[in-house]
Length: 426
Image 1: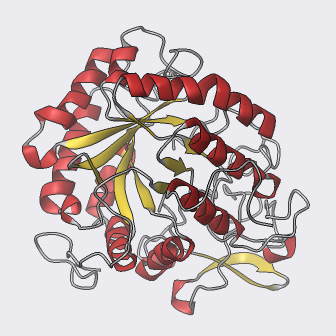
Image 2: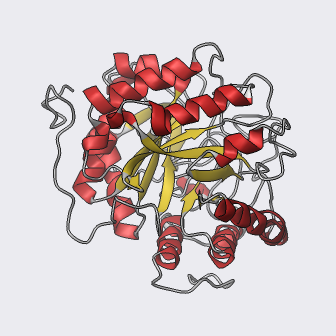
């Protein structure tokens, strides 16, 4: 089964002792009070390099990057990065010249990413927060999250927290989530930001992974424990911590088959969520399969969520490749088809009746689903190692092609253009 990996100071960030600063959102920016019409991208923000204050390479490789240690397939386009943003990669070159990567801990780089979101028309981001990394993030001052909040405010993009519970401890998961959310709300004052995404009068919060049938990797196994946790976030928490609950659920949540837990009680768990966001990455791999997914899954899901009075947020993805992460996996496992694959999913979702959508992901180069600027040709990626570049399927595309396409998808969900099976960009 394919799923996501298991895986400065306050003044400098414009923050105060009470939490994050609160600049006003810009005029004409996305309305943060509703998820309706939104196109949001998942944002990992988990990349580090030794000279960014972390002292380590994270998520680029196992140790120092090399052809043998790489864990990413897509190479980011770093041509716009300024010298103080670049992380030199020892022993790697592009056309004989030094190769560079980036760090999510650098405020300027995260700001650049959110500037791209604004430039191309994406509404905002669902910010990934892995339960197994919470203690370290807080100990290091939540640098990346502060970068994101600052960048979202500056560029008028919305953002919301999305916890990833993969690998969580079943015995402590619920309390870990409650305690960290209270910290984010009361100490970091994350939901007080004017660009924090809300829906139905409350801050939106996503918890990804509950209900996935993958042994102990996605607790809790007990549906009642899951329902109790959802109930706390929706109605049992202190007023300031109550949320509109978004569930990142299995793709087959509606039928309790395949990747979903099978106990019939899980149907009640899913029905208790305010927003349902099924994880579809890797569940289909061709245009024909995407069309069948619309008929066999999307349409019934929308009927079920309508009956439950829930908002349905499909997940769409541009393609998939994790050969460097899992060397036994084939290269270019799910081809992007020059953008046709992503566009077909978006068109199908909107035609079926979805009012909002999540793109997986903005910066996920590990699994080859990133839509940000990436190496367009093999000559733009390092000379060493395997790299999936945007010309892999025979298309001559610019590095920002998928940002352009994401902007066109946003136009459809904003009601500015009609969904069509024909991709608008040529």
